[in-house]
Image (tube, rainbow, N blue to C red):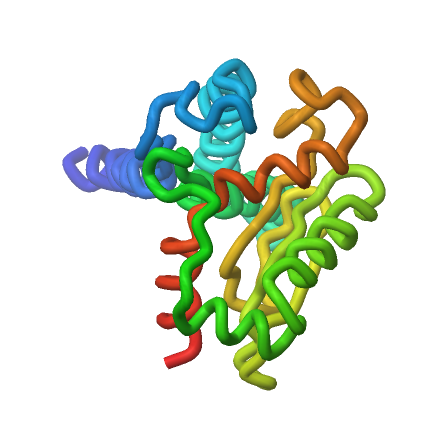
Length: 218
């Protein structure tokens, strides 16, 4: 009887551990208040973007990982790949995005001389040329996605690349990411993406970007 009880308890215990292991992702706090990026990004957008959209990716990722841990067969796990990619990418991308931004009072938009600026000037000609090219390439995304300044470890160069939907950047090390999903700008800029892409440079955290660049290019 003890053996039977133990055999029943073991799967339950394993399932319990699987659920605990899967539900580990949480919404990261912001380093600034929701209205701190105004007038460039409204507090209403930031609040909804963080507490609703990013939270939904966190919830979806935890649910997908829990289902994956409990999936009875490889076929069932394969079915979950899309949910893991979409929600996992959404969580990864947004976690980076919040760090990617800073209020102007805390240095947002300031691009000082340093290794990142030198690399951008080397690879794009000038900081303004880089901004224009990245804004144009990001704005040209059809549907939803992300524009990235990425470091290519194979060429040791900075390159502008895009990803669709919530796909994370895997081919490069992300240095700067711009969210071009409508929820990132529509309440304030409607369908005029160029205005959003112009405004966001005023709150890009170039100090954080340079830290990522230095780490990537070691």
